[in-house]
Image (tube, rainbow, N blue to C red; front, side, top):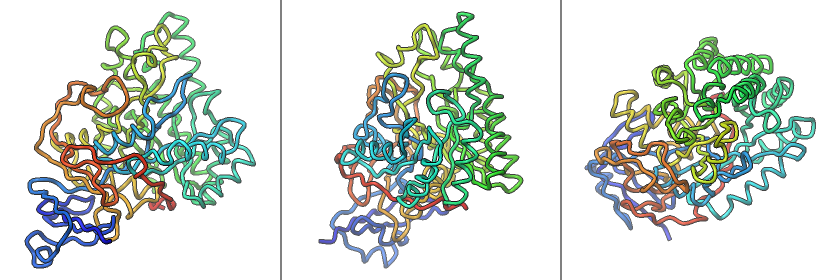
Amino acid sequence: MSHRTLIRGGLVVTAADELHADVLVEDGKVAALAAHGSAAAEAWTADRVLDATGKYVIPGGVDAHTHMELPFGGTSASDTFETGTRAAAWGGTTTIVDFAVQSVGRGLREGLDAWYAKADGNCAVDYAFHMILSDVNEATLKEMDLLVGEGITSFKLFMAYPGVFYSDDGQILRAMQRASGNGGLIMMHAENGIAIDVLVEQALARGETDPRHHGEVRKVLLEAEATHRAIQLARVAGSPLYVVHVSAEEAVAELAAARDKGLPVFGETCPQYLFLSTDNLAEPDFQGAKYVCSTPLRPKEHQAALWRGLRTNDLQVVSTDHCPFCFRGQKELGRGDFSKIPNGLPGVENRMDLLHQAVVDGHISRRRWIGIACATPARMFGLYPQKGTIAPGSDADIVLYDPHAEQVLSAETHHMNVDYSAYEGRRVTGRVESVLSRGELVIDRRQYTGRAGHGAFIHRSTCQYL
C-alpha cells in the first residue's frame, strides 16, 4: 500500500530557497514539490492533506549534539532515549546524533553496543551516534576504522575532565592522524582541563563554592588556548576539526583565523551561549546550579561575537549539547562545592524555537536558521540529503511551523524529563504545529501521535564538507 501525504499552501524554507510550494510525500520520502496553484500541484491526489496556509514548511531539525542517559558525576542525564526524542519531536527536531561513550580500559565496540542497546526500540525520531574516545591506544585506533565502516564517522575527544574523558596532546594527535586516513571527523571539547583543575582547587580552598565560580574558573583564555592547540594538532595530523560548544569571542577568533587560512576547521555553538549568560550562573539561592555546563556560560558581551560568527560562517552549526539533570536531587549534589554540580542543560525541545526568535530579532535570516539547525549539521555528519532538506528523494522529515504563534517557555509545559527550564518565562514568537518523521505524523496539530520505536538508527557517511 502506497501512502501519500500532500502538504498544501505553505512557504517552503530550506537553507537554499524559499518558495510557495506544495510538497508531495510518498512512502516516507519527499516525492515532489510544485508551485502552489500550478497545474502539477493541482493534479496531485493523496490519502491525507495537511493545510500549511500561513505556515512555514521546513526540514526537521538535526541536533548533532545530545547526551541521553549519559552517566556523569555519579548520576545520569534525566532524559532517556524515549523521553528525549519525544521532546525533540515536540520541538521540531527529527534527528539526533548522540554520543556513545568508551570507558577507560574498554573497547570502542563495547561502549557503542551499550548505546545501541539504550536506544534500540525506544526512539520517537531517527538517531545516529558519535563515539567518545576516552582511551586512545593501538587497539582503539584500529577500532576507529571499523566504526567508520559502520556509519559512526565522528569521534569526540576531550581536552577537559582529567581522570574521566581527558586525552593528552599525544593521544589527540594519534586519533587525528587515524581520522585523516579513515575519513572520520574529530570533534573537540576545547578547554585546558589541567589548568582548570588547578583553578578549581584554588577557588574551593578560598571558600568560593557557589555555582557562579564554575564560570569564573573555566576561563575564556583557557577555551581559546585549547581551541588554538587543537587547530595546530589537526594541522600537523592533516585532519579536519569540529570544535563543539564554542562559547567565547576569543575561541571564535581562533576558528576564524584558521578558516581564513583555508583550513578544514568548523565550529558549533549552542542556544545557551546565545541566550543565557553569567547572570544566570549568579542567580541566588543555588538557582545558578541550573545553568552549570561546560564550556560555561559567558558574560553577555560574548553573544555578539557568536551571532556574528554564525552570520559570517565562522560558526556553522547550532546544536544543544542537551544533557539534562534535575535541579532536585541531581544539581543539588553540588551544594557547597560547585565542582560537584553535574554539568549540563536541557534544550533539545527549545532549539528550533529559540533560533526562530533570532530570525524575528534580526540576528539571522530564515534560510540561515535552516542552515545552522538542519542542513549544515546534516552535511557535517554525513546525513545529507537524506536529512536536513526538503527535496525529492529526501526523507519526509518535515515541520509545519507557525511563525506567528506566541508561546512562553516553561518547565510546566515542556516535554523534557527535567524539573526546570533554562528559559523559564521567556516569550518567543513561533511554534511547531505538526511534525512528520519519514512521512509519519509524530506531532499532529499540537498532539503527540508518535511512538517509541518509530525512530530508526541512521548509518552516516563521512563529513560532506571535505
